[in-house]
Image (cartoon, rainbow, N blue to C red; front, side, top):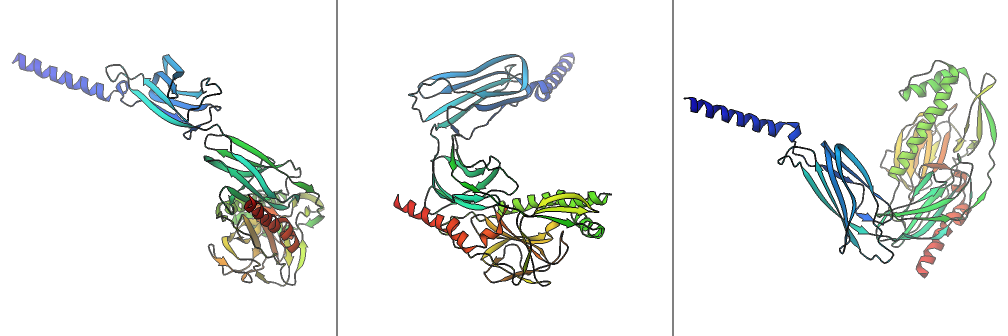
Length: 451
């Protein structure tokens, strides 16, 4: 009887001990995690970020570099106090100028401080094969618009060659990005570009091309600048405008209406305007047609029939309330007024990418015409078109109205280059379109064919 009882106790103890070992946190069975910030390519110049993590703590790691001939230790450490997260930056070994290997292997070994595996811990052994690419993308400017005013547009065609190309775009002043779309033949790209009105200083346009190994090439796009003259004008703001129009826009934007009249107007005219502009840019860039461009044909955009231009592009508006200036904003389009609910006729074929209420712009429409060019029609009263519709030249797309932050029925017409509002008058000028856009594209095609 005593032997049976002793045997039973031993079994219980074994089960309890086994359960403790199996379920206890100090005996956890998960190996360390290894995260490598790399796309599978290495230029052997940049360091590679590496993170090793473990719930019980890492007590040992070793990283080796193998080029097929020689193995080099890049990092190795035994930690007296285990760490739950270790971040490293791996630099390549000194390989010399005659290094020719096309691929290398990184081996990451890591052991945690778990008591599992007979107190030896859990082990990770991760092997990464990296392709070596030390060659920067080749970039050449084929043709571009050579002169531009602030608020104006242009076009650039480039050739970019790199078998591992990751990304390429044109950047203005290091702040504004214009994406390329494929052009005509392999390795050629085109982009409409713009000098944003809000950036008074012109530094430069750069083509920036990056490959998967993070080799970067930067090429300047040569552009001569011209001055633009902007009219200054005063707009009187009434209590009625603030209590009705400004307040209504804030409410329709689901915002809290400020208590002070001046604050109400500034909130509508600044905060909501900035939000609306951000939305326009986001929609324009997300839904622009990025298909390959072979040729480009565009009719000049027409003025609203029998209309008067009430405000021009870049007009410097000073808002006056009770004889005091309370705000100042540059006007970003053309305001054209005709009769009430005048028909808005589309000048070019395109696709509707936005139709909705948009704060200060009221009921607004954005139509994409390809290559990053879009048109904006704001303050409309009615329309039969919907997002996704293809519109034709000569089609009535909407009627003018007084929705949004306006004092009367009119059309705000804007032209967008990848979401940047540019001078509409350029795109309403047949000669400008020919000399600054069409001729540049045709000349680029001839240059490409001659190669």
